[in-house]
Image 1 (spheres, rainbow, N blue to C red):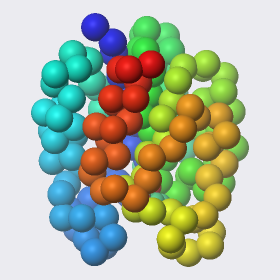
Image 2 (tube, rainbow, N blue to C red):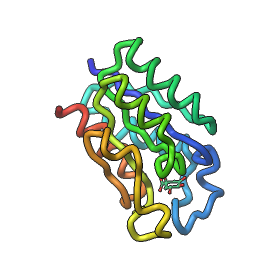
Image 3 (cartoon, rainbow, N blue to C red):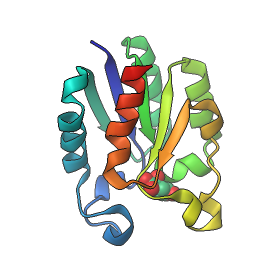
Length: 143
Ligand code: DQA
């Protein structure tokens, strides 16, 4: 059974209340439950974490490597746009990482158009709301 870690970064703890016109009305808990349900047939073991701290995202990536996870689905939130530390952690752990964003970052403010972590991830899925999470898990399961 493939172990897959889902990492959520800053402000995603506030989903449901946070700009629902952009991010939808589901809470992060709802989204994780939905992801588990949608991917149950794939037989992956999913563990999900959320933190507002940059360094804790790096620690989670190292934890994923040390605990034998197959890969990571990561929504690093705003850190995606500027965290070299998270980018370096992703390339250090050498696990397949799928970057996800609920919103279409390319259709939003210019500062969101570039992600510094994309180049070290296997690929990026954005703009499909909560569906990006099960899609990310499916990609890892089929790799
Ligand atoms: C986000 C997009 C980011 O630009 C933003 O800072 C977030 C959420 C998304 O899921 O659409 O926090 O990662």
